[in-house]
Length: 551
Image 1 (cartoon, rainbow, N blue to C red):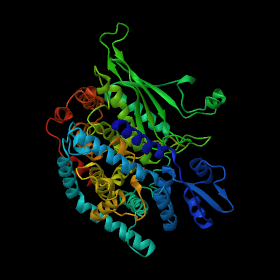
Image 2: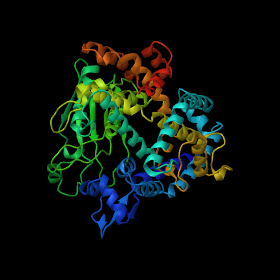
Image 3: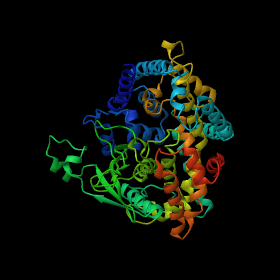
Image 4: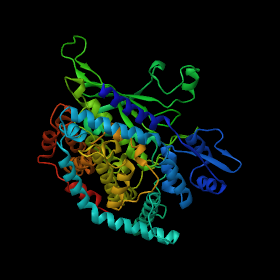
């Protein structure tokens, strides 16, 4: 009975994030600032309201893509503040839902004999217990602290230069990070004697990204990725009560790809649902529709093939061109693709151990590994980045600059992840931050952790009410950073030298090792053992910090 209550609260928290959209109005002055960043025809697609602009005023929404675009690119501090405050107070009802979830998870876990929900869920993870999580986060915080302080100082100087005052607010970080990155890109291009236009705009499209995926799985694993037609009954992106054929002819969003290995035969199918629409899940995720498994007792087939779906909310395409993407969107797409490939390449007898049904603090390792290709200068210049009008590949120098740009302010991201991970542990640890259990409010603890770390926080906001990972990764959010360390180590050990080789066999060798010694096992083998086999030693944090320190 208690478990049913918990499941209901988890569903309510997640559904509120998916279904609740906050609409708010900005006046004529801020509306003009919005249009400096986002063209009106694109804005209409993001807000998804016919009356989004009337009498000079404008209606905006808490849509993630809209919010992140304005925060990253609007030079108006007034607009950035408005957008940040509105979007981070969009789901106040989730605060009470979260309190109830913390309480019931704690009660359930103590009834089962555990000290806390965190002790319970971590008992079968790589990290084993909350004490080891704290040890890992402390090490990461210590190693990145010096870089973080230097980068925060740069943000302060940039704001002082632009606005005349240096205090960094939460809504300033995305904009001034991009501001300095753009300056550095220009300086790098001048130092290398490159043309003054160092823009990467126009080099990333959905089609380029998918073609890059096809090349990647072929070179790494000898797999063919082929697009196939989708029967109407398989579609979920159209209203089946309307004229479905007409909707499809106008270009529905859903696409389907089948994967086939040159020796092992059919591997499974992957759906791509990449663009926003009303009522759709608002984040990016990989979903398993059907797990793969071996079927030794089946005379018709020895394998149940997996079916997975990649769901994103990438920039919408216009009626006459392919969807242009930002580089961060390409990284997101390749990250989710890594999850999908993990699901397709595992070989397990039990479907509950298939693919991503692995230890939660290991499962992000393949996705972060694949994400790395989206910023590798060799892969960018040779395969992924092609200008949408000319087809011309991105230059090697420009690709290197893009890779360097990724490391700019990486320590700020790491410190923020550490704060979120510590917050997650505080929610579900031995003394949970829940008033009903004698603890502080979640908002107070969230603010306290930000201030202790020196990470900007906006008083009056509750970003964590939209933090869906508290449901799916409760007490396990540290696993994202944990897995990034593993992925960086695997990349350094198996890929960094091979990807620049002119011999395709070198890339295949590394890819085969990763598949046959790691991905193939899904959750059926101890991840620590798999990592040690792939690396030839115990994992290390050194490649991660070596990577983010490169400029």
